[in-house]
Image (cartoon, rainbow, N blue to C red; front, side):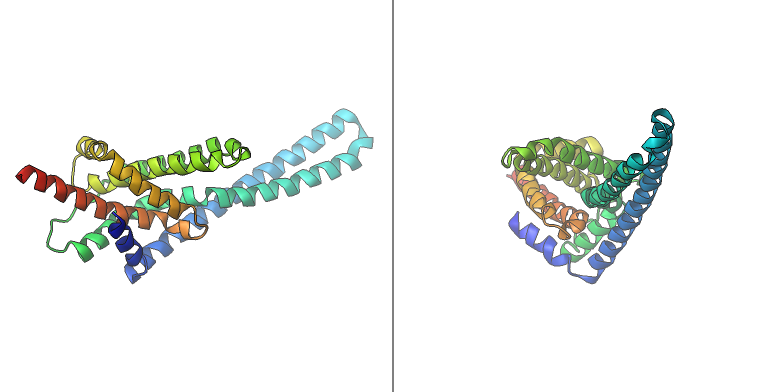
Length: 241
């Protein structure tokens, strides 16, 4: 398993992976910027509307205090958008990265398994759906863990183990679906749930490193391609015996 992780890390430094990483991060940044601009305009409109309504309800004398209050709220909203962009970046990268998982898998299979049958690319709709699930699950985990961060690291542990489970499940199934029907891929993952979960702990550790976590889709997919190959070989050997 750790050999597979080392191979995935080593391949991230190769030119084909760097090109995929640049495309993935570039699209993710563009999406985050567009979302930020839209949210900022909505909040600005909401602030102006709220200020006008309150001034009309309270009276002209409230103009000065309300202006100061909404100025402070505007600054807070701007900071919130920036922090939210940082918070959402890994989830957005995971979504965008779903468009490139087959390209990543093909590079791994061509480099390390040239004599074996190549996997079949996932249908576009399935890839988008799986990427959307990964992104939404990541956001849900973060939101659920945030209140627990107030209690001496419990939230960190909850987030770590939940991330380990969710990411390992999704990326392993993506790798398995290249060679197996969807129900069989899910059943294969369940049959090796302990191994896959431990691999997910490695991915969760990768996710916890700022900046580096932007490459999570590349690392996770490459790692799970190796792991799926190893587990498939072990099952084949067991059947022969």
